Each structure stands twice: as C-alpha cells, then as structure tokens.
Image (tube, rainbow, N blue to C red):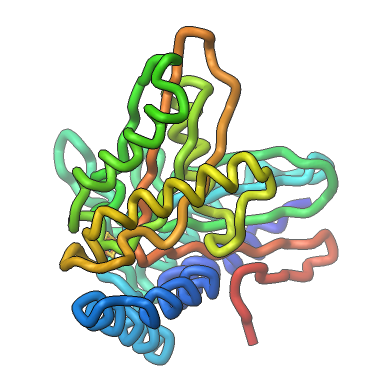
Amino acid sequence: MVNQQVVETVAVKLLQLAVTKLPSDTKKLLQKAYENETPVGKSQLKAILDNIELAEKTAAPMCQDTGIIIFYIKAGSELSGLDKIESALRKATIRATKEIPLRPNAVDPFTHENMGNNTGRFVPFINWEIVPGNELEITVLPKGGGSENVSALGMLTPSDGVVGLKKFVVDTVINAGAKPCPPTILGVAVGGGADIAIKLAKKALLRPINEPNSDPKLAKIEQELLQAVNSTGIGPMGLGGKTTVLGVKLDYAHRHPASYPVAVVVQCWAARKATAKIYPNGKVEYLTHEVT
Ligand code: SF4
C-alpha cells in the first residue's frame, strides 16, 4: 500500500539532495576533466567545482535555474494506492519550492502565468514504469532550461545510418556552443518514433555517467561520439578546452523501416538527479546519495 505521506517526504528529500549535491558520477568526471584541462578550461572547471562544494556546504541549490521537475517512477505491480502518488509528488514539489527554496519556473505558455511553486499543467511531469514486486522507486530529474533549449530531434533517413547519427550528434553540440553550460552530458537515442527517441534519450541521462554501456556495440559508439564531440574544442563554458562533453549515454528502440529518428537530449554540468526506493515495511533507501 502506497503511503502518501512517506512518498511526499521522500520526494521533498530527493529534490533537496538533487539540487544541492551533485551525484558522485558527474562530480568524479568533472574532477578528472579538471586534471587534464588547458589553463582556461581548468579555470572554468575550478569555478564549477567550487560552486558544487559551496552548494553542498550551505545546502543551497548549485544553480539558480530550477529547471522543469521530472519524476521517473518504478512502481511494483503488487502495490495498491498508486493513484495517490501523483498528488504526493505535486505536494512535494510545492513544499520543496518553499522550503529549499527553489526558483519557481513553471510558466503557462499562453498567459505566462507562473503559479510560483514549480507546478502547472503536466508539471511536475511523471514517467511511469510498472515493474514486478511491491517496492516503489522514485527518481527526480530537475532539467535545466539552457541545456534543454539545445536538445534536438533529427528525423533522418535509414540510409543515413550510424554515420548520419554521429554527424547529427556532433552538429547538435557545435550548434549548441556555450549555451548549455558545458561540459555537458548527452542522452542519445535512435529508433522508435519521434516521441520514443526523445523519451529514451532523456531517460538515458539517469544511467551512471561514468560507466560504459553494458552492450559493447553501444559502448563503442558512445566512446566514438565522446571523442568526436570533444574534438570540437568548445570546452568548459564554451571558452575553449578539451572537455565539451563528460559522457554520452546511448539507447535505442527498433524503428519503422522508413524512419531513422535520432534524439539528443543535452544535460548541463548541473546534472541533478536523485533516486530512492521505498520498501513495503516503510524503509527508505537513497540510491544516488549518502544520507546520514
Ligand atoms: S543550463 Fe544548467 S548550469 Fe546552465 S543555467 Fe541552466 S541549469 Fe544552470
């Protein structure tokens, strides 16, 4: 049975963890990049790393841009009361906005009205997955606007193939330049339809950034893409350097014979995400962060 109050409390905590403590996968890659960077790149990465440390120490958001708040739910099929989750996540978003505090970012596209609490129509957005069992896993991904603005979808043709995919990814990074606050992380997906490719590309950002793909074929393409985008020289914050992208996460779906959709979802260095699992006995385990 889903306990609405527990879901709300955990979701507030997840939002607080996500915005104040960068998960160790991205932090380690930023530190590694700092060791290898040019003097200009180093100075930018130092400012980013200092900012991350300051956010942790002061429990303040690491970036003023709250982003749009997205949840990913893995709900055990044996759980009852799943209908309570949406309102718990909405309440958690409102509470977190006030308590952390977070800049209110959700705006009506027609009237420009801002509810002042990071909620609105379809915001926070909830992605659902039903899995076997009786546990509930909640992930939050506050997705920054600057990097989202340069995300791209290409409806390529099957004859473009993997070469076309690589060109599209590199072009996306070049067109983005400094706008997404590099170094970035790229979620890339090919196949399905337009919507499926974008969904998979964004979800790929939830995977540990510093681990290779479990499929060797995809791991090889991820590495090739990483080398290609880093050869652009855009560098940290677009001021030049070796590290434009920290990691590429690739996913795919089977496609229509006539279609070759490629989605690139760009995530800035402030790769905020946090996950927790709620067990049937009420125990809560935080999977991405150490919680004392
Ligand atoms: S793109 Fe990322 S780092 Fe840049 S302002 Fe937005 S959330 Fe912050």
